[in-house]
Amino acid sequence: HDVLIGGDAPGEANTIAGNLAAGIALYGGGDGEEGGLPQRITIAGNAIVNNGGLGIDLDDDGVTPNDPGDTDLGTNNGMNFPVLSNAANGLAATTQVDFDATNLLGNPYTLRFFASTTCDPSGHGEGERLVGVLSLFANGTGTMVLSELVPLGQAITATATDLYGDTSEFSACATVSSSLAVTAVVPAPPSASQMVTIQGTGLPPVVDPKPKALFSQGATTLEGFVFFGTTQWWVRLPG
Image (cartoon, one colour):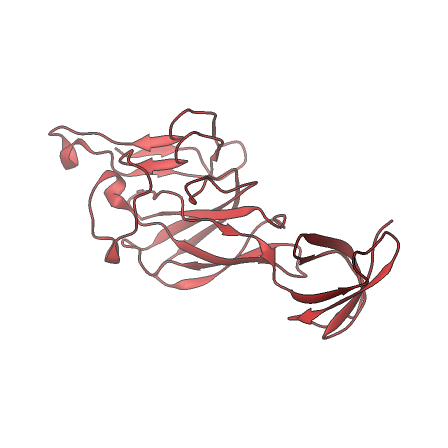
């Protein structure tokens, strides 16, 4: 009980990788406090990656689904995880992700956001690197601006920790995509040093050139220098 694993500041994180089973498995039994189950185990900003089982496994039994109102018991009081959606890169130099924390119990609480090259086969986690920490004082929904521009196709996941220190399992992954709905790339396929027209929706006007803007259309990813437009952009490809 009352254990802190890792931390959020530089140099405080552990690297938990390469285990045949779970990265961190919390389970117990007997007649002790809370039936001998581990409680108030805070799992902070660690690098948890490439483990054979879940990155964090409460009760060591695979993904523990969220329950309505988070009233179940168990290891770390069966803490629910947040629900993520709409992880996207736009013009900004960071990634944003929407979160739903309405189903958590014990606010205030802390959400920790992680990025990973790929999502765990379970669809939950793991957490290769910490990309954001958010303290909330009420249940609700919102959008988190992460600390880096996470590459397209990588996975975002999150944990929740209540005021007592109980940390959840990793949430289901949200895959980073472009927030731009591209309908056409002309000409296609593009070549280096070529001016390409990007047509689509959700394209905010650009006054000044913006370097390293990313666009995806199917399996094609373009990186170039944006000039201006509203329903289309002109991009000078590097090369």
